[in-house]
Amino acid sequence: MTAVIHLTSGAGVHKKGTFSLQDLLNSVRAKPDLHKVGALMLFVGVVRGETQRGEVVKGLEIEAYEEKADEVLDGICSELMKRKGIVDVQIHHLTGSFDVGEDLVYVLVAGGHRRDMFPILEEAVERYKKDAPIFKKEYATDRRGRDKSYWVSESETE
Image (cartoon, rainbow, N blue to C red):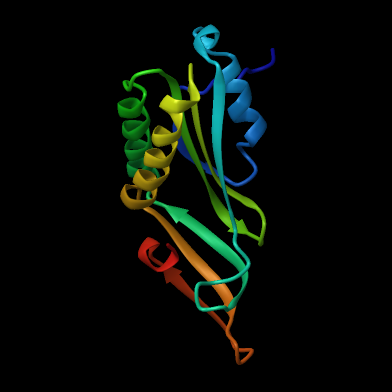
């Protein structure tokens, strides 16, 4: 017998390689109220190759307090789904080691009309960045060619 995996929540933290953009799209298309959806809006956060200080980023390591992060992400999605015109909100953050250009996070908003969805997508992104206990360690080379690594707070990356 083959096991079928269903998402129980529209949010969560996943180890790199266990959740993909296609998984996200499949989960939305499987919703019983898909007939109410006129558009999908998607934010895909990727590893940037340069820091605010002009250093070259070699890679990132993402860790999370998974239980709490899942709870926070689920709460954000649940609250935003109650807004006018919104059918679904999902936030999925990946953890592990990442190279420049790789996907880190998917935030999706599904709704009937785009005008209702743009502010929800922006709010979802800003809230997960501020509220979820997800931690980023950056590996970079400074302008003098020295390699270094450090934990980054969101205020340093805006």
